[in-house]
Image 1 (cartoon, rainbow, N blue to C red):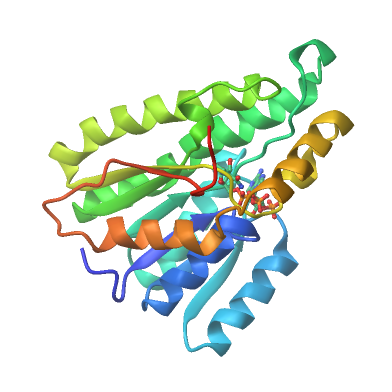
Image 2 (cartoon, rainbow, N blue to C red; image 1 turned 180 degrees about the vertical axis):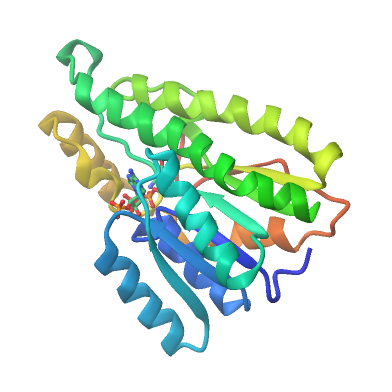
Length: 248
Ligand SMILES: NC(=O)c1ccc[n+]([C@@H]2O[C@H](COP(=O)([O-])OP(=O)(O)OC[C@H]3O[C@@H](n4cnc5c(N)ncnc54)[C@H](OP(=O)(O)O)[C@@H]3O)[C@@H](O)[C@H]2O)c1
């Protein structure tokens, strides 16, 4: 599938990997629907993308709400008639030890990292099925492959959606001609660590950031583009992308 003139919905587009992906897709001629909660961030990115000659629209969305996801998808369909790409990227990672019982943060991760992926997928799937084409990207993590202390719940959410991604690919690829790509990054520079309320884990992540060169959001955007530009017969099912200096 050529990315030219395609329509994409990117969740978590207000910062980090999602914003970088939206910028990259827009420079490739893709019309991008920017979905996240922070409206002013989305509007700023629309201005930036439009100023660079691209096209994007802000779609304030809370992925934990199925109706909010459906409204974002419907807005894109109403304006452009189709959805070719979904980037399921919204995510949260407030690290803590299990015995500190930060149950609200656990719920937040389950709601955004698991339910958010299911909600956004459900929102675009009927349109992609009707088109008999589409490409769904799921932004998972090295944390879906390995377990780390302090990340027990985060790893559980990423492992759950890694399983979902593979099952989704097996079901909708052959039947509906929809490709599914699971991206599993290692450490990427973003705002993800800002949500950590546990001072020990916050320091651990800040120390990590000074111990090696993290990937840039643009590096992940480029891997998305690689999979998107691959020929229609080819589904890049999984991409494990790490900083060269990451020794774990
Ligand atoms: N950075 C890394 O090292 C790394 C590594 C592996 C995987 N990942 C994954 O990559 C994805 C992007 O993270 P990032 O690193 O780019 O972090 P980030 O800069 O914090 O971006 C997270 C995005 O998710 C959005 N979001 C959070 N809750 C949301 C909700 N309820 N509804 C809609 N959007 C929501 C945020 O927007 P709003 O706050 O405006 O809603 C933000 O745009 C996540 O799934 C993360 O798990 C990151």
